[in-house]
Length: 360
Ligand SMILES: Nc1ncnc2c1ncn2[C@@H]1O[C@H](COP(=O)(O)OP(=O)(O)OP(=O)(O)O)[C@@H](O)[C@H]1O
Ligand SMILES: [Mg+2]
View: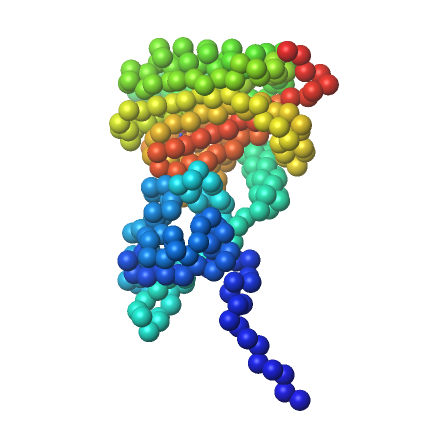
């Protein structure tokens, strides 16, 4: 007996994957039910409107979509952040496929939301990777440090046996370069002292940074604050925390300066967050420090490895600032997250507050 053919009419509206089709003027011509739910509106408001209109500027890369139409090249992007005009932010994996229809070329968007659980497991994986990279670098750094001391010592001895300044120039060169390398290796090894914890008002180190930066920046970068005065004291090493935040603020200053951003701004924000998961552990209360700048955003090619040592986009950068910041924050069982798009880069340091112990 033959089975009755399956009626596929309602199939697309039954799937949980978002399906949206646009024409070559980037106007939406189709959205399934999941798509309408994603845009939080019905077909009337969607059809005929440019897909870019639903997002904040720069979320949709129009040039890339036009290029996809021109070249017929399909593409996939993972963990894209979709910033809707109504302030919602959705993380999603995106696949864009060219369709040839009787009405002309179309692009099909398949959007799968990246759920919270996946984000957390990815976060744990990142943490483990960072840890492994650091261990590797620390091991290497130690291996370099020992013979380096020998080389420097031997050059000093050799220098004593030499008589002319011309000859000594070479031993000086060896000593100088050894010192340079030793310096780098020490920074690679990172902060190795244990934190000296004390009950501290987070705003104290932040205010220090503000005055430091005011004295430091010749440019007119506005450093504003938006503190939550009700944050309880947190048990931290204030010097370590200050160093971590300073490394992040310095990057923001450099990014703003190098890009010559008009009206450059850095905001220091503090907030309390409830029920926050940090490295797989749930905390009922956490303090957050956010460092937000309106610069160009983090270059796409280093986003995934941002916190690794030696990752830099600067000619003169050593790529250690964020790696050190992360190590310092890890010493406090905290985490650093980053959210970046052109015009808005936000680093969030989360520190757990243990209720039982907390003091106000
Ligand atoms: N606020 C920001 N805006 C844009 N890019 C940033 C920002 N913060 C960090 N980055 C990028 O991250 C990279 C790594 O930063 P990190 O502080 O680890 O190293 P670095 O600043 O290059 O060198 P170092 O801090 O050792 O002098 C930077 O080179 C820069 O490309
Ligand atoms: Mg830096």
